[in-house]
Image (cartoon, rainbow, N blue to C red; front, side):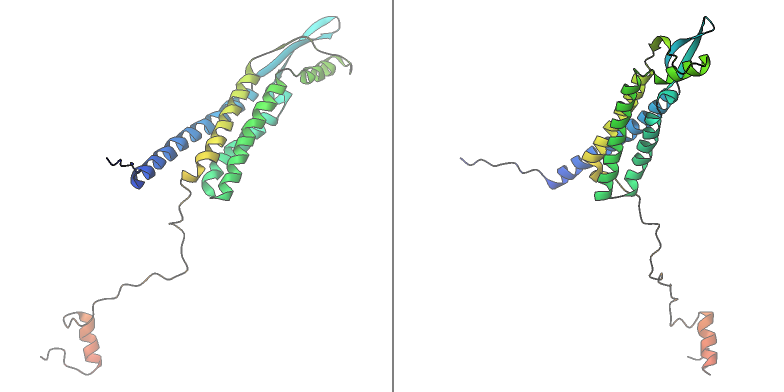
Length: 213
């Protein structure tokens, strides 16, 4: 009794690769764009709050993400630019840009988590308000926005990982609009038709009778 081993059909393999490419591309675009937007939005929100002692009283202080650290916002912009640049390069260049996208996401996560417990921004504001360079903020509290920025970084990181894994299946900017150096072939009119006006004039120039048979 003979056993026949099934061999995958090349067409089915190419169709599966095409589906994987389209799906990964859609997910990467969504994660990259959403991650950058979330990270940028989170850095504009309040990350920490506290009080400073001024003339025997308490003065409320707050610090936004941009006051604490500018790294997450900067890396989010870099990640978004890298996401767009992925489609402008091919082969090794695409791998480099995809790695940059992943690193931007990882850096955003790290910077946001480090800023979640930072107090230096509020201490600087307390010293400015009280006029005492050694003043420190009291009743320090933090919000959840640094962790929201970290989630945005994770989405950017996921987009970078997808670009590294499936970027070879993604389309690149088409060059069909590029103008080549060779001149376009000119269309030539059909010759030998005695009824065409130009043929009649040519016959007269040669001294022939175009009406003769």
